[in-house]
Length: 495
Ligand code: FAD
Image 1 (cartoon, rainbow, N blue to C red):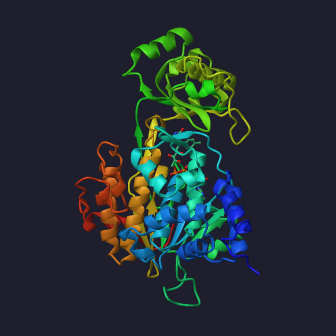
Image 2: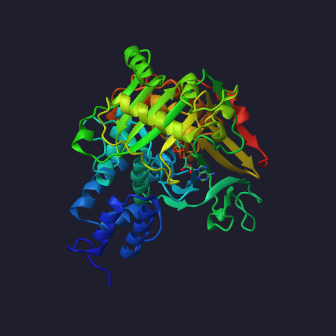
Image 3: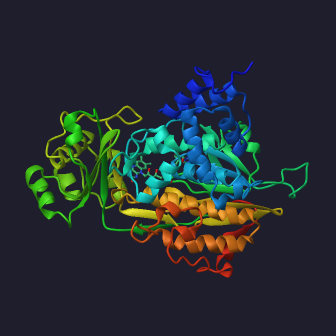
């Protein structure tokens, strides 16, 4: 016999509360399965959301539903029917894949999301633009993470952001599968509409035994991060001057002394020469910039000069190519740890007591060195493939579209803008807009992405939606013509 959901002590309430607080990816998914079982709910999509809403009718749940209902009531979603009948596959449960999945679910599409890992382990902290804070609040972020952007704080750790978005995605009926790797597309073997042969596009997955290999979809949103793009997309490299980034995280015990230390939201050498000169004179550390955010951890990101890394014994030998320069065998890990700790201590005036490294997912001190000399971006944001009369729309979002320069903190803001743009594209696709028009419009919008900043995007952030006109001032959706994107419509099998 099922228990009425608004009864005090109702087990479903307890599971839901655990779901809201869950702090690990697997725990979130486990609680959600348990919750659906407890409530006798099956299926996916907005239907599942409505089922949950009807069954969980107590104050804390209701406060969340009212936020999500407000969001879902936006006219762009046409009451969750705009993309009804569209089947989407989203690759990657990073912030941008999850954010795109949420929009597609609100549009009423069936959304299956694949993630090759089973944990969210990145302590590093992302800078949030005002619109991303507003956006996340509107998705109920504070219900899942009470400390979300308290006071003037404008950042969040990558893992906390993933947790919030994963929970929202699940509640909106996104089907999330972890430990599944996307490896490529399988073109249809039969004509669209025939019964005996596969009429739609499918995916090559690892493990190949995954039942999702039979899932046929019309849209693939690829959000696999910096290194992953599906075949067909070309990447462009921009080589700038040598830039070596170091990130590090220290345990935050939230003591009074720690609370009092001021954050550094981006000091660049050109703005504070004295600080960097003093740092160099006192420690031999030579930086271009440094950022310090206090979140779950004390997080620092800095760009270090090669000469000082060589002098301090972090890099063992100078090499012409950056890959060999930063190869593990050419880096002294202990010296790197000391370098990062010294820079953190100096820049916080030695006021953070007992700096102790937080651990990364390998159980090692969370310090990393990265190359930002060569940044990549995709030449195009979308493609259409056609085979045997069946089409699939492919779109990129997040780091695989444009790789961000971390010290500038553009990654997640531009990533969310692209997630909204991709959702808008899927809406146009579902409305039956001719494919070349969909692609031309998407490329017209994409042209704007790399120049966006909080200053040149629309100021009225409460009005932002997936409609590009709400976000980009004077956007010309026809800047690129259909005749200019013919090469983005690929006919035939996938090589
Ligand atoms: P990601 O967050 O990289 O997510 C991509 C997801 O796709 C991952 O979960 C990955 O496991 C999954 N995936 C990849 N390939 C496949 C596949 N074939 N099949 C299934 N799943 C797949 N930005 C900053 O501003 N500051 C930082 O300090 C910072 N540190 C970072 C540290 C690391 C180690 C990484 C990888 C990124 C960091 N970033 C940082 C970048 C920042 O995380 C991204 O800008 C932001 O998370 C948005 O990225 P995304 O969602 O596009 O991709």
